[in-house]
Figure 1 (tube, helix red, strand yellow):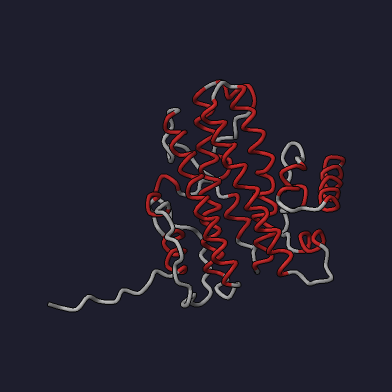
Figure 2 (cartoon, helix red, strand yellow; figure 1 turned 90 degrees about the horizontal axis):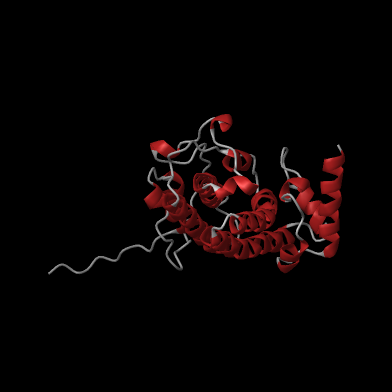
Length: 275
């Protein structure tokens, strides 16, 4: 009898490559294993486009449907469209995180493992939106999808660029959007969709906290949180883009932002609205 072969433990790099390059949604959403190895992070790799199935390839932005809001969400089809759009947002976030693991293999080991934890959330969020959209009548891939989040990530040149751009701006904005859409879905008589947004909102607080923690760890000691954040935003991302229709201070305070940081955010929002 042949002796059993010693199988090499799965590497974080292999997980990132699978998620980023797979052309199957199911493969991208295979649950990330606990405690993979990270002793072979490899060379830096930047990928221009993620692998995706044919029906989820990025389309020109104007061909993708606009996000339904407010009273329109009383129509189940409009709610299905909203879940379709939100599923694509969550999938892009997952792909960007895999991109970051490959583009910055020398990032601190604790950052890389923490990012994997968040990627597990993104897989779950994607699945929640996909499943709910299907229940409401639209299969994920039936509509064109845009590449807005993915495109903005292509300018990231450091881990600090990433934490400013995705956790603190896109996920920061989602602290407001999840509350807005939870309310929209409740008013539309869809408590199941509202519960999905409530769950994601709670997770987003932790994701923003992760970004803020690593901003503080990696920035120069004499640089303020605000100055470090703004220094690592690349146009068209800017501070006011991290706010939804209204700035909700509560979840941001839970994520660890200071009152001073929030005052700066509020001022940026006022300046943008006055222009």
